Image (cartoon, rainbow, N blue to C red; front, side):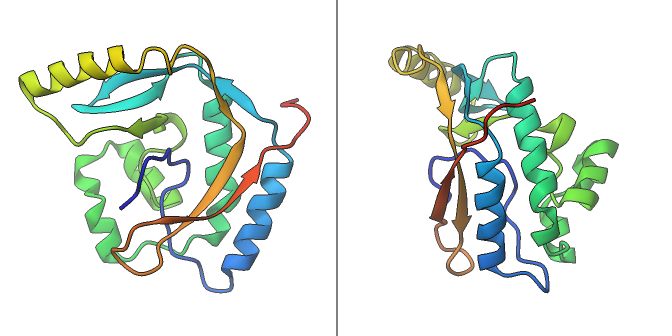
Length: 177
């Protein structure tokens, strides 16, 4: 349903008074003002999920992700009670609950971790075997830095349907200064 991706701003409904066209204009302008950068990818385990993550240091990536969350917050409709309940705030830290209230998602800012999920949650020997296999199989792909040079907007055509990329905008800024 989500495909292979890295989330910077969690899925959201558009706020009243905004449109998808205005969102695209904003994303286009944002991307044009930010430079491309690289990260060093690796295959790791996150809470028994196997994912492509970024090796430290990740300051540029973390700053970029935080800027994305802040920049597009005006387009996000407040969470409904059902959406809030699905995020299980009772299982989150105090800071994550505050992020959930403020940004609509608990894993932003200091709690953000870049990942591109490769598997569902795995247990025991299956997890360990598959982690070792994927690390070895992807070693040549992960040897070179990964260039982060686009920001994509995904849309869900109807509730429960697979997300699709509606546009991807090239990062064209001059520098991070």
